[in-house]
Length: 508
Image (cartoon, rainbow, N blue to C red; front, side, top):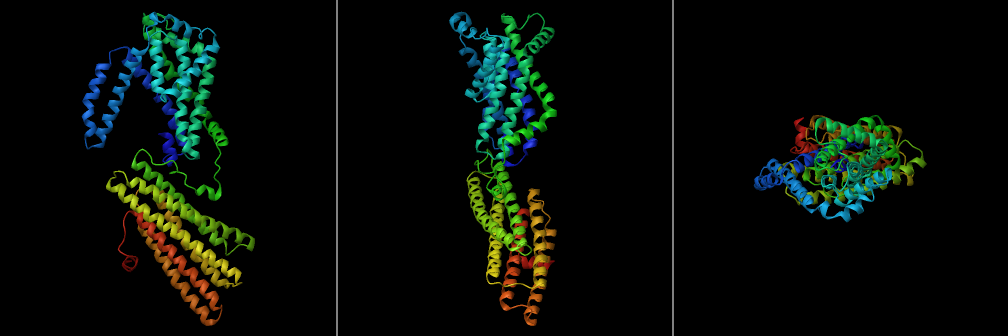
């Protein structure tokens, strides 16, 4: 889930590190539940009753009740599965040869600990669940197939193995999702490494604590039935204590680990390459709401790309020819990217629409379709203006200084509208204040009218040729259209459509 959230942009990579550390502690609760309910009492009748009680809620219309039912049925199946595992483990008294084979790997001291760390890692890889692997380990300990130190070593291995699931999920994710998965792996490997150096005194300390709070069962290193039953609780205590201490010890080093992860998992997408789809390349999320959030993140990047195109076009008027050629190439390349982004986001939104959606989700998707269409048109307009500028260079037509200044001022007004649009995109809650957008739209139109007056004046005074006048008028017209499309985006973000532009402006 954390990898998915990072991939969707709902949380940042740095924020995910805190969630991962908390999840490392939270996942130890499963071992306590299995130890207490799975071995200390007959939980299967309760589990079956729980499944039967909550199964009808799966068909209720209220989503909260369905979620509750799924959670309770999940726990019921977990404990029924634990009972199957316990029954499947052969009796140690009837399988002396198998026990002797397993026991032959436990006589190598520290090497045996390392071996069973590897076994725990592989077991988690095979089950794809640290909870299932922990349950199997506890059953083997309870039945006497492995000793308390070996079970602890397997638990450490399972702490490494559980990170593989996230790394597999991150394979199709963006660089931030991959970094979150790598952080999880490195953080747990560091924790297991320092614990291996202290494992013997640590286990003795756990044993002493258990003997103090559960007197009469003897040492958990013993092979008696009472000691093995207590050892399952001891392993749970070991698992929780280890993860809590690991977070406390490594918390101060998290920034260093983050820098290391960023160094080994570099962001290869630079400059324009960064505007390839980053959030929806991995397909639909588990819910329509998360998928919509991913699409909105892509639209935010789309808006950022439009702002870059604006800066590139503005640079054409104030840079030397070598720089101008570079800007022209950038605008052309980015215009192609806008076409691809619109197509891919549109296809993604169509996929989301194929599932059952709420009215609010449907409204958001329709608004997003409108937004990406307007943004793509803005990209086209910047490209068309760049071609006009290219023609102006080829024909060696020059605009007078006052005309260049007017275009520059118009571009500044358009930039303010783009920045407001991007700010409203980041809000992403429908609470868009259209008053500022309307004010900027009025300013864009007023600037257009003033520039047209100046244009006709220059034509009448013969300040520039009719050819230069046509080019200047082309800039005015296309920039005004860009302002209209940006205002359309603001309306879509606000979740409503005013009557018409003319009616809205007259009303002002």
